Amino acid sequence: MLTGMQIAVLGGDARQLEIIRKLTELDAKLSLVGFEQLDHAFTGATKEKLTEVNFSEVDAIILPVPGTSLDGDVDTIFSNEKIRITEEILMQTPSHCVVYSGITNRYLDDIIQSSNKKLVQLFERDDVAIYNSIPTVEGTIMMAIQHTDFTIHGSKVAVLGLGRVGMSVARTFHHLGARVKVGARKSEHLARISEMGLTPFHLDDLQKEVNDCDICINTIPVLIVTANVIAKMPSHTLVIDLASKPGGTDFRYAEKRGVKALLAPGLPGIVAPKTAGQILANVLSQLLEGDK
Image: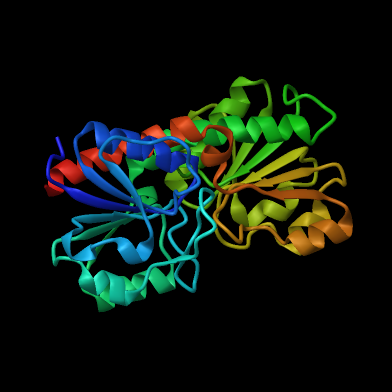
């Protein structure tokens, strides 16, 4: 239980509602900032403006999955209020206050460091990433169906990267009957791809490997689907980039050549916000109970 814990939830999308629901069930006291347009009320949660929150009593701050912009702005879909998290706000919080975010950036890192606070990146955790790979795969399948005129079954699919998302994507498209090959660099990843019954290739050979590709799914957050790679693809190839913004694809050149390329980060929050929110809520509740 989180009885007596004061938590500030700043902005966010529908995923935050599952977090709020879970934490109030555990008896935490919540200050909700950026939710004044939300009709639903939660027992134990109070809607407040940022200036109304007594941060000197806050034990934890929960930011949306994207964290903040490079200017410190926090996204919210339930408010027109501009929410900005600053070093001054963090300095008001107790020394034990922990900030939770999906991901971070230079701005957030800087104010965390200068205020001597602890930041927990939920998407850096293996459990969150693995659970989130499930709605990510479902969203990828949805996009592949929507944006092609052929079946996944029998199509030639190249998956780039064998991380937590890449492994789930490759396995699922294989089970749907696609002919899947997976690009990686590490020898142990190439061995695992082969063990999974898929076709491995080294990413140094990417230009050669995409020459007959129907769907290319990138999970690597650096520019890897370059203009030279896109130039080797058939014109009907669909590129789905699952890497965090700005992705790993040269979208300008893809458009110039007429290859459809889609940047699709954050699919769990788009295709299954309830499930994605429950994943975060379960992990957050465990972390908060450990910090209590």
